[in-house]
Amino acid sequence: MNITRENHLRYMTRLAPFLVVGLIAQTFLYRLFVPQEMATDVSIFVGALLSLMLIGFHVHNELHRVTVHANYLELSFNLLGYHQEIIFKSITEVDLDNGRHGFSTLKFTMKDGSTHRIFYIDQGRELYEMILDRTQIQLQGEAA
Image (cartoon, rainbow, N blue to C red; front, top):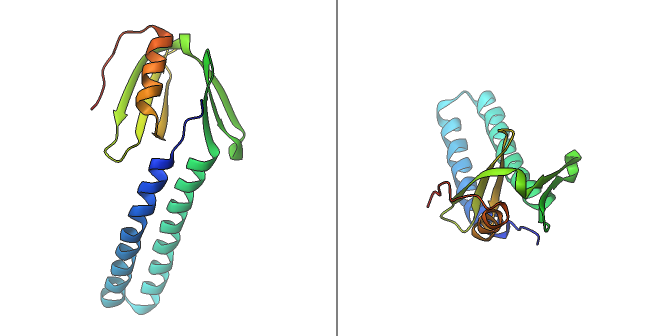
């Protein structure tokens, strides 16, 4: 089972026009209250940061893979060469944060005390219940 992030991409697509309008409003205000030579630089800088943020979310959603196997989760981010396998039996606690926009964040704690988070996933509830079932741990707590 592959975990997807389509709902997060749809949410970001709906949010992007509002971010651009905010950027345009900031640029207008900079031109009114900041010296002209600074206003252009600041506007370009803020626009570049907005672009990097949107590109970063898209890259994360497309390249960060979460695959569920019979006994473990496989997390990978090929762009950075990251690959990790998390065995279900080594998980001691699971928390689910259901977002309002159709995507969730899953946090789990390992026996060694380390924590892992999987952000912006569509199948948060299913993965949460699967981990609880395969680890046989008690329901620790859940954010609505």
